[in-house]
Length: 429
Image (tube, rainbow, N blue to C red; front, top):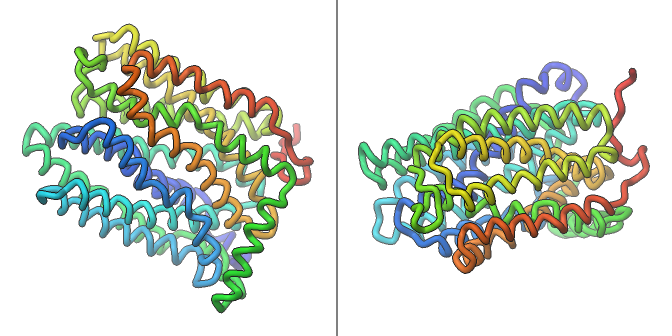
């Protein structure tokens, strides 16, 4: 990318929309599909297992990440995958009325997951290549906020719409319309980024399969040669260990009947909880954490961020034990957890960006780090439905609190590189 291009495209024009486009399909696949399948009559254990199984591409993306360095620009892959995502969501909508809708829709979710993981590699590549470390720190709060605005639009606004449509036009027809809306949003984002997204840099000078293999091997070798990399991997995996178990079960718990230990909310009520209360809390937490960390440095704040991330899961323990009937008590508890989630997630993102990614292959190594993160999230998610079925909702959320302990231990012990190797800059006073 030329100096002129960097100056002409302000980050505010593309960072928010780029990370909104990352968050929307991931949350649809990981969370919204849970509610869709629940409404369509699939069992909790099957939902938790299969909707997690299709997220494997986010863990395996380092296998093809280096190939994106060979062709075109990073912008090319961002725009292409957003258009493909729009088409795939349309096909998903058309699969729902079919007799074998579960297997067909799961296949399309797997395609969407591969497409979205590829998008994320290229999108993160634009971010880490175009922005300086100072700008990375300044925009990381907005990055996280906009990623999760995508999350809130998906599991808040669009889930609310789905709930209303379930009543007015029918369950299948309602979810068909919502999947079509997902597709339309992705296509609109692609058109926006055709105009405003920086190129992110040209392809590397790798033009053959042997060179590509050599590049991949070099990417892999240099990743594991990084100082304290095994500590870093342990941190990335364990930071989300409790969240990985809770995230699949929370919407099922909110929707389950009170006789089954749930809260008995309708699909629309869940959309309101996530899309209004959760949205405001998460965005506030994410933005505040960006400034908080930029002012004090990641090393000094990481354990605090870990506490914000994990301790608020106690809100769901409270809800499971007391089963309150007041909607605003439920919404306040979810908002409390979402504020902590938004505040604490910044620590993980910045650790990967500042402590793991720096070096010759920033984009590929950041992709490796996020793949490890998704593995740490995915494995506990796959078994969460079986654990929840075995324990019941109340004991399950007590178990989630116990499962936060490894994240505290590894956050306390994880070493940092020297300040020149990625510590956040401290603004001059």
